[in-house]
Length: 384
Ligand code: AMP
Image (cartoon, rainbow, N blue to C red; front, top):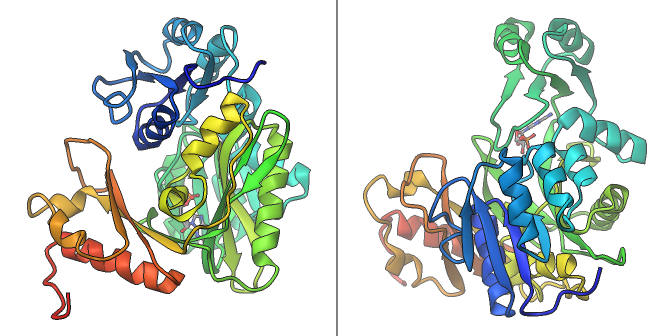
């Protein structure tokens, strides 16, 4: 396919914050963005040139949408296969249907990782209504039972500390396939975001160190302070995954680093990732500009860090006492505020994020946590 230069139209399937930040990068560079969204005035639609409101499962609407753009990309991996194929019949879809098919299902994804010889969490697959109890007893407790499809942010997961916890897992597995994973004693959680271009060229960002609260990402910091060799291994594994998926675009590989120092792949997201938001201020090219460059067939940008950076998510809870105190948060040096244009701050909903840069990654973390605490109404330190 020819290279798409500024003025071309990119079609975005999915309309949340990832599409919004992609749109900011694409429009800055003179591209047009059309978004397909299930709701009107979505976070992406507010900034896009055109917002088409349709259900992701409406394959006719998706085909018509694709016919009106130069290339289709996405920010949401759970687009039904029939819709992706409908889009692919009208336009190039990047990443492609196969990369999506593999990563939409934990069982398929783990089989793919095993086939690549990439270290991953030990697991067993159980078909819908299958014998979960037998799988749990083979894997052993503690273990984690996860639905194979359509899970994110810890949704569709049960931790089994002991066999007594089995009833919850049985409910989960009654009507859908699941995977039973060994529980990993974590030293740290890491992720690597990388881009792969049309020509197969690759650019991976420095690994991020991630902390989750209630299974939702709370804080990311990069470049992560890691033992020698671990960062290089994480990047090499990530690049092997993108290569194996023949993915054109941006993807994120999430890793567990266990207490014995082993790096295991947890999961793969075939799109920009929450842990890569800090590349906007922290890297020479952001993950969103990389997505644009990759899908447009442009040269990839440099993933080199500009400055150590840390990102803290802003969930709906922060709005419990009314509008957060943004002015107080922005008094902290090196802090940038991103809000996603969502009007209903429900608990657990990602409403925005803060990123702080500093001379060292620990200082960036301190700044971003201080800024978030101030936004939440904490009193200012005497020196501020
Ligand atoms: P996931 O949706 O698979 O990324 O899981 C969300 C979070 O739950 C992870 O980031 C971990 O903090 C935790 N988790 C999931 N699976 C496991 C596991 N097998 N062992 C230990 N912690 C896990």
